Image 1 (cartoon, rainbow, N blue to C red):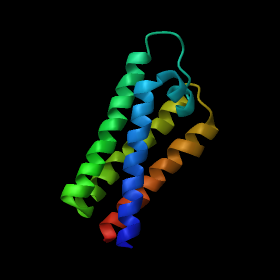
Image 2: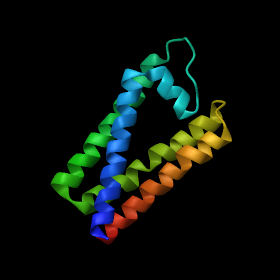
Image 3: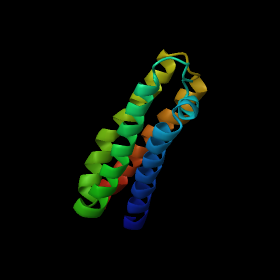
Image 4: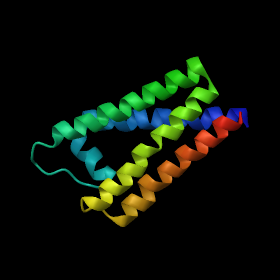
Length: 122
C-alpha cells in the first residue's frame, strides 16, 4: 500500500503542476478544458493566477512528499481537495456544463481525498 499511496500522490502532484503550466502557457485553451471558456477580455490575468496556484500546489506537494513524508503529504492533500471542490462550484456558477463540473472537478476532489486516505494509512 505504501507504493500505491506514494505513486498516486506523486502522479497527482505532477498532474496539477502540468495543469498550472498549461494555464501559464496556454491560458485560453486551458480555460476551455477547465469548463469555463475565456472570452477576449482581461481575464487572462486571472487565468495566470490559476496557473500559478496550481503550479505552486504541484511543487509544494512534491516537496512535502520528498522531504516531509506521507503524513505531511496526507494533510496537504486533504486541504488541497478544497480546490477541485471549489472548481466544481465555479464551473456550475459561471455557465459551465454539469458534465464538466461533475465529470472532471468533483471526481478529482474524490481522488485527492482517496490519496490523502492512503497516505494517512501508510
